[in-house]
Amino acid sequence: MQLKVGRQLGAASSTARAIVIRAPEVEIEVTCAGEPMVEVDDDDIPPEAIVPDEGDAVSICRIGKRYAEEELGVELLCTNPGAGPFACDGRVCLPKAPKPLPASD
Image (cartoon, rainbow, N blue to C red; front, side, top):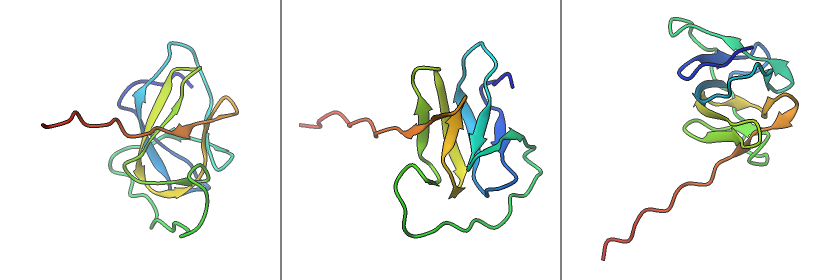
């Protein structure tokens, strides 16, 4: 699929949703929990999010977190939590560390 910035993606096997923040010019396959993600409309109501309390940071997609695959140049923003991980062309997208705020001395 050709990704475009601002496109909202969802997968049938997970309640996780994501918005494309950064996208390369080439076509790539984006998956979540092993299933292909497809473009969804804002009108589509995602199923109720069921997020396990336990799990590592990669296998659970958390709302508000950014996930990136730096080599491909892809960045996703999770807008609905759910089972993961997000992956691009088989490479797992890792959560990005928050940027430190400047000191306010």
